[in-house]
Image 1 (spheres, helix red, strand yellow):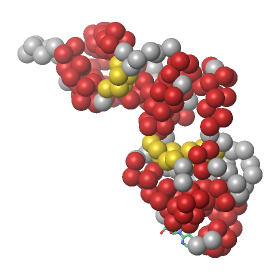
Image 2: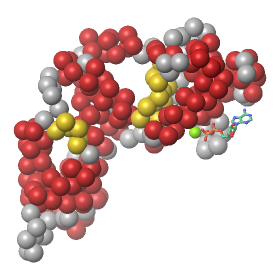
Image 3: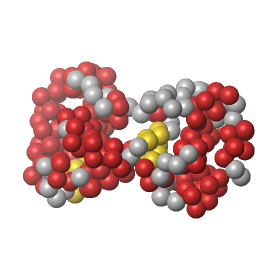
Length: 232
Ligand SMILES: Nc1ncnc2c1ncn2[C@@H]1O[C@H](COP(=O)(O)OP(=O)(O)O)[C@@H](O)[C@H]1O
Ligand SMILES: [Mg+2]
């Protein structure tokens, strides 16, 4: 299929979004209205206009959705689409951390997943019978919620675990111990990956420049599901 046929399939608003020269574009439409189709068309259009595929980054929530977008662009463009990347927020940010490692003064680091975090929270919480603290999973969820919503800790606590507000001090102690342990062991959890990249991109023009040098276009699908941390 040619790019013109693909654009002809779109309605005028979709076509406008797919071919715009605006620096920033936000597409709002309900489920099933054709937003993903528009992103596929935009990627295909930009490549057909001469943007190298490796200069484009598509970001979405799941690996599956990401690879589906690439597959669809390839269906239209074939080999011309080679090098197009689509990934999750975390994979995208992790790639930046690895590639520009020096800019982050992090040194070697190990990525820990939810199971690893649970193990750490379980040990830090302790497990004797009289322990009134929230369960390890609740502590972990509260910790991650606070960060992902960029909330004040006491507000997050009142919202997530209203019965536990009087345990604020010992809960904070567990979270501080978790953070100390992460630092000592050079661990990064998934939220750290996003937070580090957001923080350094905001404070270092040189790093931003380097990242932009390799990424002329950033296309984000499922933007409605992003949280404040991903927006940073
Ligand atoms: N302009 C259009 N004409 C015909 N079918 C369309 C059009 N835009 C989208 N579709 C179809 O509608 C369905 C939903 O599109 P999709 O891009 O997945 O929507 P969204 O991402 O907004 O949920 C798909 O099957 C897609 O091929
Ligand atoms: Mg979609």
